[in-house]
Length: 419
Image (cartoon, rainbow, N blue to C red):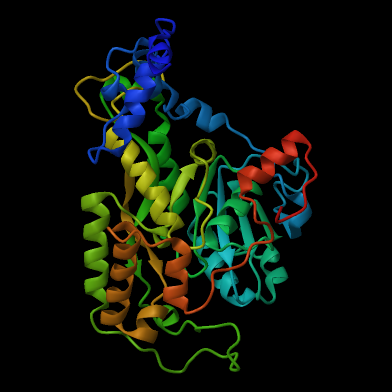
């Protein structure tokens, strides 16, 4: 019977049962090989291999500039206000940039100070949308929507309520789902943006107005994402930043502690950033909205979501050969993509963690967590959360992942949460 089964052939493009058996028998081999390497003469696999790289091509710059996504969770909007220039526009007006800012136990006055600085230093704030994702515990956020500076206003400020749980990854994806901008800028609530930050982002991502044909002709590499250099806010206001919203004192501390060694932290972080093209979330990760959704957004996990997304972008840049969106291939170049670090002044993050725990302890802890997550031990994000915070990871309102929920919605399935 075994001989009869193995003698059954398939079409020229198929995989015979005897080949399938060989493939299964080789599964126990320690060395990693691709399916095509195991079955090098199979024509179907050869065709898929040739076509696969074209399926992974990012949306073109032209598509990225024309992309417009309508928000999918409008019922979660707590407050919203548009500038005078856009008050009569459609509620889904496509802004140039959408800032996605998660907020967890933050004061409205603190966000006003941070966003006020971003408003002051922006070139064209009327073309910028701000989406603040209230993940719980925040106070006085309704005051943020009326933010203005010398008659300058953001094009639109919205506050959306995120109650699904699951941590920062799902929170950021929820904010992106409520944004209409063609560029998504993910900014932590304790980060200060540099001067002309909006112009720098657009110039870097869109290559000063060039399209893919221009890049191909000049042999340039396209930026699949960008981030600012790393900096720590050691200004008097930055050093005096309160630690928690639950603090009994509403006034800023009278003295500010400057942790020794903090400049070394900046130097080593920027060495990592420029040498390995490996920025972290506090460096304001930015992507075209269509590229973000094409890649599937942030992974659905409570920690290390920024590390995972940047790792994916770096792997694309390192492993995909130079196929341009116009279908042409640059044979002399290994890749068409790169993670760009925006030249110029850095984005400044809060020094709170270094003030609270010290430079050595914080640096060691951060390095250890990355090593545990990305190293041979392969610790999960939930396990890292338990290790770092000493408590269980954030609970989810549903046991299903976002794509499972969306698939059920498309199929019209009415399944209760947790089933």
